[in-house]
Length: 255
Ligand code: ADP
Ligand code: MG
Image (cartoon, rainbow, N blue to C red):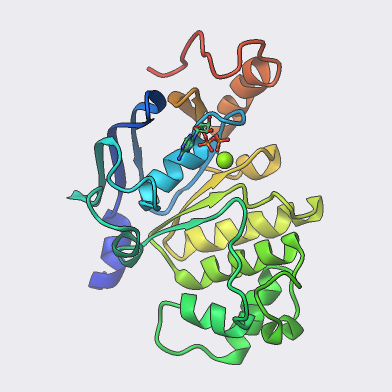
């Protein structure tokens, strides 16, 4: 197997005893987990559980960079001291729950910037937009307020497809997109996995979570379950959907 393909099989993201505090509040507590290559993961948990914080901390976003205890490593190399752009170069990606706007940039230029290889043709850009449910006319539109929330989200998803990262965290990719798009998201995740990317999706949609190889359940900043998605979905439904003590877990399903 040629070198570039080999790393796809070897790289893993490992988090060890990862904790994150803001002032005196513990947001994440001693999280340990290893994401394996070429897998799809889903992260479940009630609002405020710490799902976005975990993804942002791994990405090293402003406010989350270097502001934690514990270790994050990519294929054995410690990366928690690296800045967001350095982590991005190493192949970690994150798409926001609420997509960012770059006023004035044409969608075609935005997508070209996200593309990791040197040259990208119009046909590939059009194909990528098609995969996220947008037609070629959007290439000349601008990434600004003239796009609806759902359209911006779709542009963000198209950019993720072009990044070809080693591991990507999709933070509620389904929010703002109509229910018809479950299939689109599932197809996209499966395609990315086939290309060698590890996909981590934070989602409330059971149908999307069920295509994952593994699911994680976070409550009050703790990883309280990790197993097959069917099992974690059942734990979530039976315990979290009807929870009368949100973000105050009374048990764990790990080990
Ligand atoms: P989730 O994505 O699971 O809904 P978040 O990770 O966004 O939850 O947030 C978890 C908790 O941490 C929330 O109570 C949130 O208000 C708090 N939190 C996250 N980031 C910060 C921050 N930078 N400053 C203060 N509180 C934060
Ligand atoms: Mg969130």
